[in-house]
Image (cartoon, rainbow, N blue to C red; front, side):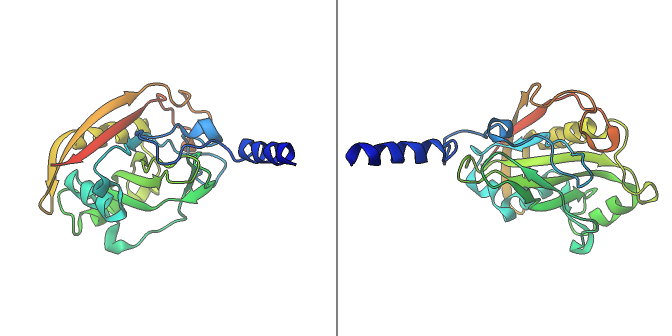
Length: 222
């Protein structure tokens, strides 16, 4: 009887999936457990999650309010009049949650956290979607950002040529170093995650080529 019970227990553990709960790491590779570095744009293609806010960042940065305040420190804010047009995108971060809709979408604010994103909606600019890796099988707490630079409203907000790489690089340039907003000061460092996605256009929304790299940001509150 004891031997049978041990066999059943071993089988149940083997089928439970990888155990990566609350590990002291910056993030887990989504592809290690059935996820992807491309989100689901709803048309059979995806947009690259090309920036990761490390789970080793200050905990207050990784909350919903915290990522908004950090975004405002680097030139982004909530959408114009807090209105989102279009369907949300989803992502599978390999954490056991399957596909989950974006937590929030933030847009370039051109120096005005209050109304600047209304200008971005008209003339285009950088924006990003936020996805949180917090499922029971890979609970890093990291935030995966799908960053891109888009055209103006007259071009239906399509992505500019090379817009995924450009948007990523512009966000990182704004973030690295010391920034502040609402009396919160951040110190941010970056690390390139080379080749985490296939380079090229395969599976990428709008048939826009990517270089396959993502940037890991570690954000500490001073």
